[in-house]
Each structure stands twice: as C-alpha cells, then as structure tokens.
Image (tube, rainbow, N blue to C red; front, top):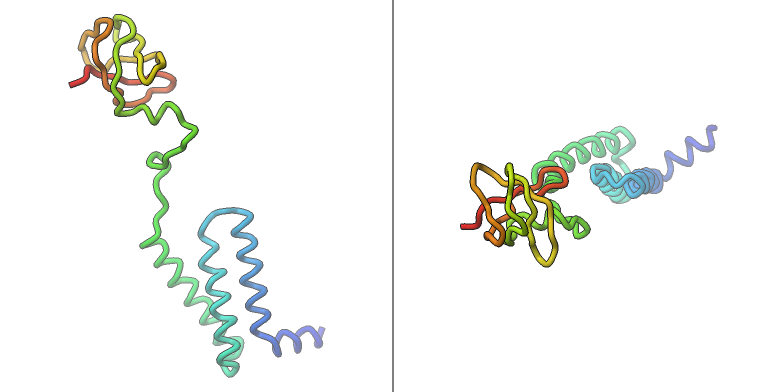
Length: 154
C-alpha cells in the first residue's frame, strides 16, 4: 500500500489525467453534458500539476474544486440546452405541420373534420366557433394528441 501512495504522490499529472479520463468516459456513456466540466477541470489540474509541481495535493484539490464550480456555472449561464419543444426531430412528421396551410377535406361538424395538407389527409379539430366547408383554406395552429388543431386561413 505504501508503494501505491508513493506512486500517486510522485505522479500527480497521471493521477489527474486518469481522473479526467474516468469522468469523461462516464460523460460519454451517459450523455448528460454536465460531466464535461469536471473532466476538463481535471485535465487542467493535470497540466497545472505538471507545470507547478510545488502546488501539492491540497492545492491541486482546491484548484480542481474551484475550476469545476466556475466552469459549471459558466456553462449553465452561457451554454443552455434548447428546450425539448424547440428541437427539430426530423422523424416527427406531425409537429412539422404547425404553421402549414391546406384545405378542408370534408365539412367540419361539431369542430371535427379532416384536412388535406402536403398531399396527405389528417384528422383535425377546429379552433373557435368558425364553420368550415369542404375546400375551405385552413392553417395548422397546433397538435392535440393525434389531431391537428386548425383555424380558417387568413
């Protein structure tokens, strides 16, 4: 055990590099995005331990803690993930229809009907008290489960 302690004490660069690599491997396997900053901080401390060997373990741990806190807070402030509803999923063929225009494929009864958009017919519900006849222009305003929410086009 004494040999391991001496090895760690004599090679702080490799210890911090290994810590950074382990944290980075965890980040890659989870994909959270938040472990990038502790991994980068460990890499920075490894370089600092190489350049300033007199820093010692207490200084290295303090530097690591400070860098991790600062980089995490800066990332939280300046690198915000986009909300899920703003992300564009190319496989989501329904949400991409919001804002599209089409025509009523049938007369709407009790706010329910069908619309024709981009060469396809969709089940739809009408917003408000408007009346839509077959062929009337519509605009998709949202999605409610499996139904498109539509209104008369302006």
